[in-house]
Length: 169
Image (cartoon, rainbow, N blue to C red; front, side):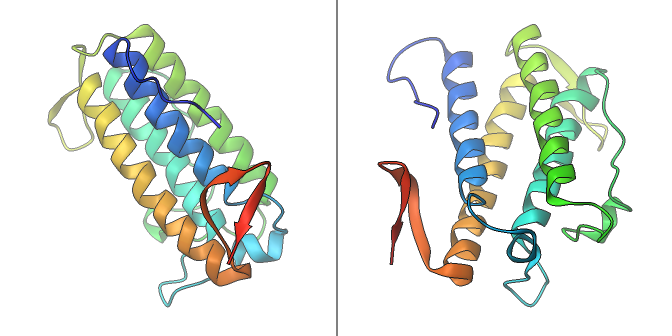
């Protein structure tokens, strides 16, 4: 699990906080099979694999697109379909897409300054600082969804792994 620094440079701290939330989301998937990863836990149909698919798309959409960096096309159907992963795509496909999106986002973070600006999909100007803050918010929000989804699936609870395993309810 990524440690968050108590002191240091702003960009490094923001990146570490984002990485920690990314790690939490992935930890919530550990030990689950394909069926559980796709199991809807709320009436909207949201499931853990769909959350990862969504987070991957927004990593590309916020860290790459606004700054004119290369993005990978969304491979899972129509973006407007929400958090549903088409059956022909496996959990490994989605996790690999998320890993590539994180890598592309990390490269943008490394290459840009916090003051560098780009143009969001909405046409608004955004700074890398704003994007980092927004993605910490976005990823933490979905980490909370993953917390609840995992508890509903098998009772596993907790924010961080404890001695390598999840705390049980």
